[in-house]
Image (tube, one colour):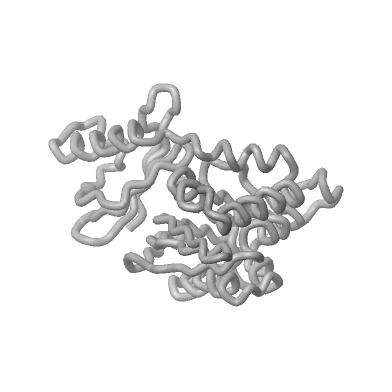
Length: 254
């Protein structure tokens, strides 16, 4: 079964549409039986289709708990920064997510979103979402001693513990750790070295000429950057060794 770009774009766009409508059933129906959601990349992934110790079932309960924790209580809006990219079975979106948490508290997160589709019987479904965004700046926007922020923080903590348990709550907090600014410098150096003709850097980038890095995001072991490849908008996604900060794999979506 083949999926044309329009079908894949429709699948990717259906996710934020369901989120905006607070339509949980429609959102859950978009996913393949076996799926993974990394939101944020660097946190504990949500795995579907595997045995879930909390529900003692094999299915989509972890994804449903993710919805109840992070989506159901909030008003989430997607602001598109650049045109979407369809590369194979992956749709890349360059967005800023605006989350209205109640009490006038609003948090904005620049983000690179990857939607990977699975093909099988019937329509394509989402196999993986990778949301690349930086946790620390988001925390900074909702932290504080203002009464509204205290209420929002307490409500968030309660939902996290209730739906994700202590382990899941701690894992989300641990996502604040990433390769950070040193990782971003490594990726910029890689791109500049390739531009100068360095053979090793060019191999890592698959021989692609990457220029005009903007909106560089460090999440977990990954650094993503909006860029230009062969004169067209693209996304560079680099995965780093956290100990050495070497780029061990790079993917260019264009």
